[in-house]
Image 1 (cartoon, protein in one colour):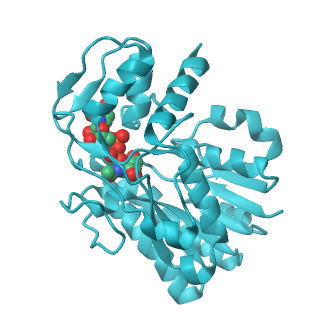
Image 2 (image 1 turned 90 degrees about the vertical axis):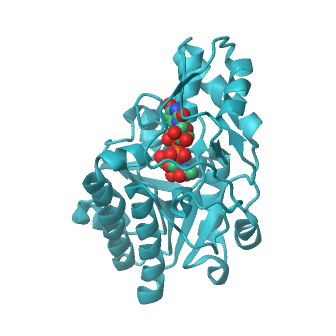
Length: 314
Ligand code: UD2
């Protein structure tokens, strides 16, 4: 049994990681300041985890959270492109300063490995598809810059201090418990909950933008594999976590019409600043070095997610 520290454990991805680890009989400790995470995500598992309400910017709290941990899954962030465009200072603090705090605390506590929630946004709007880790990053939004900077810190801590770190570039993760309630929420959480309650969703632009939408179980699996992969294959490295297939928002909307019984049309609005047109991953590096294989495809994941929102709202 190992002890995993999850930063951002109240979030959609952090709380999903916690559930899976508990299922596998592991010990879980978590921190969250509930700036974007939610108490409801933790309520059912609160008795099974060592939870500390704390900000990753609080170094002493990170020091005490890392003490005795085997692995750190660093998920805490302010995860939004448009929010970072509005507030680059806030994004920088949470997404870069917070990461450095976690890294220093993890280094001093001599944890075995830190796995970091990096982002596909690091690639920017480069026309080449699919995106491979060997491509030059070209981030556009402050959020993307911050995620890339944190990735570089991960690599730096491996090179300078020998702390084993792995960065997972998430490609639009979606699934149960993703918060649909903020204007900055992920598009699928928004569209599904809007359409289930008969509200018209708005596409920013022509709806022809595409994403390699990745169901949460695939991201959870990638984290657990990243903890255990041999250091020679994983430490100090960056991996795409995705499915290797992309769908447009217009195609997704049609699928959702079938799944939610929403019969209206979509609304089309202005394109969003800092947005990326197409995103698709090459996942061969994670397959080769981590043994990663997407377990749940887009359609199945979408169906499971719609079912979850339908039952959790009723
Ligand atoms: C970026 C990253 C993703 C993750 C995420 C965290 C890319 C390609 N992906 O997601 O990996 O790090 O940031 O937040 O950079 N949209 C609408 N209507 C809405 C909401 C969104 O049309 O009501 C559009 C939006 O303009 C974009 C697409 O849907 O083209 C996806 O937006 P999102 O906010 O769900 O995620 P994205 O791609 O910024």
